[in-house]
Length: 97
Image 1 (cartoon, helix red, strand yellow):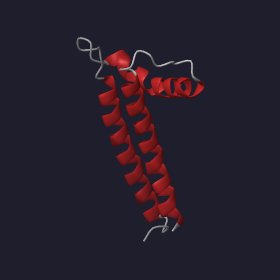
Image 2 (cartoon, helix red, strand yellow):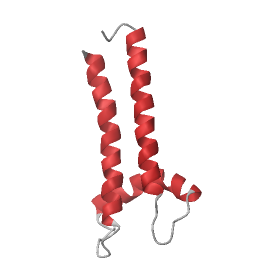
Image 3 (cartoon, helix red, strand yellow):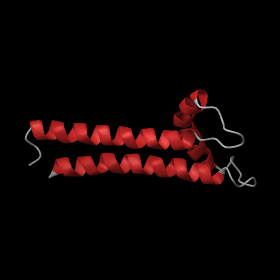
Image 4 (cartoon, helix red, strand yellow):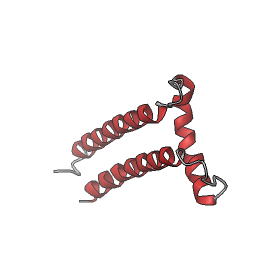
């Protein structure tokens, strides 16, 4: 039973970070957003650590930055790999039935 809670927590962490990336992208459309706000600054700093990897590889197409979309797809793939690996591990240890 605890193994299911651990798997749920792992999945929720990925979902929260994906939601943070989505909110960060939406907020960039509004020029009046004050990025010095502590909450928005935390959002920007925490998501940009991940998004900067993709911004280095993928150049903007015109005025559109598609790196957050690619980063989201990669995050979903990493989530699936992590969850399937955890299910396999918990099954091998006999913690999941």
